[in-house]
Image (cartoon, rainbow, N blue to C red; front, top):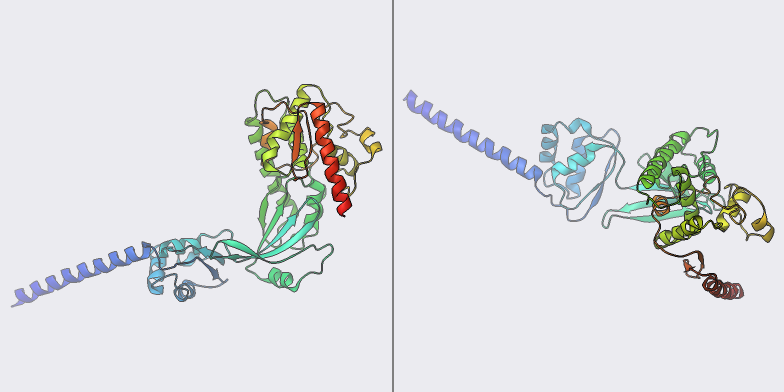
Length: 385
């Protein structure tokens, strides 16, 4: 009898173990399987929150099929204590395992609301925008110029929100003085800037910052990024380009940056200046003359005078027979690469063509015809105004 009972007990234990193993296997497969989410969502993790609250939120939004299994999986992988505050994008079909990784990885938030300080060549603008998870695109909520516009209440409210992300984006062709002047006006940053970084030393890009970040630390990040870009462009340059150093490549890139905002033209503009350098011709480019007047401190805001085109400054390429002594702006990576790898052309001249681009020419006669066409366009535009 006892043998029979023992036999039944062993059988029951084996069945129970099999069932437990099956449950564990099912749980693991469910935890790793694609989730039920059909559209991307933005999940906010508040400071001081826990996996129970997060799992409930995910369950309510239809991102996980079981909040309990989500928490068990997080506990099993030792990630329950690694929850990070922020706003996170959860992609369609994300598994519980992938969602746990997202909310415990840390670093920058991947969705929600952000304030972008845009440093442009002509002005600073501030944009408040929010990510629409359905198409992974930002929707603008407000944009204003702090120098002339009234500060909207939305900006003040959003800035005070602890989950708001902050980003500084500055355009190619902005001068170092313009960058520093703009950073000084951003009240989310702190710290003094004792001197303006050298011209061309800052990499135009988008940089995420946090309230209280030091301005010098932000500038250091920009300088480090630009050093790498210059080194990469110098290493990738053509052997026949008449540039003696990375510094000369940077100078030429800054001129290219100021001469065209059309991406497909950079190689052609670079070819004009390289051809002129190879032939011992003066570069004769207006942006260098303007820099000799403003030293990069703001925008000239008017046309050049004949006397200014004849004035002897170190940057007046209508007078000096070579590259100016310093860059005239902060060029982006594309212009740096174009300076080291210009297109193979015979172009010596270019002039605006009225479309935002330029008309290029090999001979002076051809160039003069292009200039005449541009003068007609200028006259028509002046008449319309």
